Length: 76
Image (cartoon, rainbow, N blue to C red; front, top):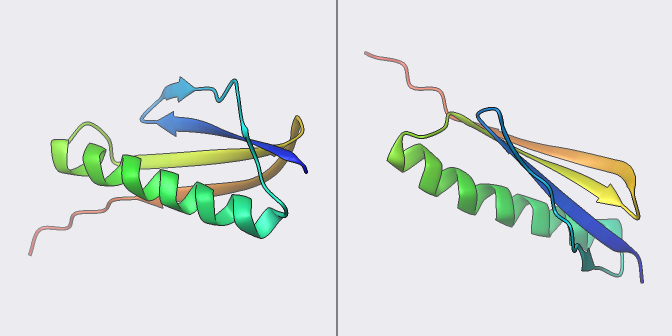
């Protein structure tokens, strides 16, 4: 089973995933990346500590996909 790593970028801060997780396929890793990014973004956006969260997914060391979540607030 392939191992996927989920590296986080939050407003210039980089948090590497040293351990990773095993998934049967890329779709399982994509779902986990979306859930992880959404959870981090929710907390960071509400706290006002970030306006963008990016999850870079690596499959066994090689880049696989990027999930990007951005908050845009436009005054009325």
